Image 1 (tube, rainbow, N blue to C red):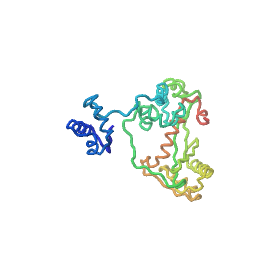
Image 2 (cartoon, helix red, strand yellow):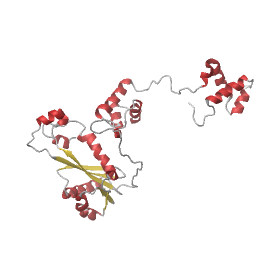
Image 3 (cartoon, one colour):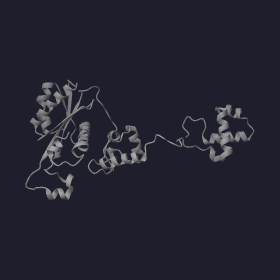
Image 4 (cartoon, rainbow, N blue to C red):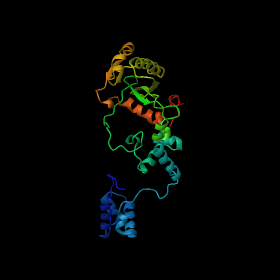
Length: 293
């Protein structure tokens, strides 16, 4: 295929044929056009064999590809993305391919990126808010993101995910409240080290105790100093973390109201927890999900 630095385009090849028909010697054509005599001879011989059609660009794709991924593996890659909405790396690990090969297969079959799919239904999202400005702090501990994700508890015997919406509604004991679990998470901006706990509420005391344990966890993994903590504007974060932050020399930062993307790294981690753990498969009890290996 022609590229921007190519010596010859289809028009240049036709000029070679025109000059050859005018009686130019191949050596003179090559010198005038800055190409080799071998190149000139190739285009002349191709013109003799195929006419003007032989001067057009041809695909550089090889006639055979002995090492190409088999159709069976390609179908398995597509099935895993479609049925389980797995990431490229997870598909590659399961199938035994390189992540780059799995990515090429997905692109070849026009499979959309996971970011364009609804995490629950798998349907393509027609529009979503994305940002073109990406950043990463210079070193671990410079900034950490904190948030809470509320998940509905699973009744004993399984909920609608296991039995379908109609079946789950019939089996559910309406007199018994199921309630919620609260997944607290802390994510380092630079290294993406994350720490999460499933707790019973999101009260101020609970948030403060979680932060203390998260600081210890980060220290055990090499992040001994946390400089800044960014959260949303929840009351528990604004008022209950002051003591912990002051004790450890952490400066608190808050996102602008109604702008959750400013805390996007932990928000994206919450979504990963949903797709890779909380809603990955049906669970028969809430305990089974909370203590999954």
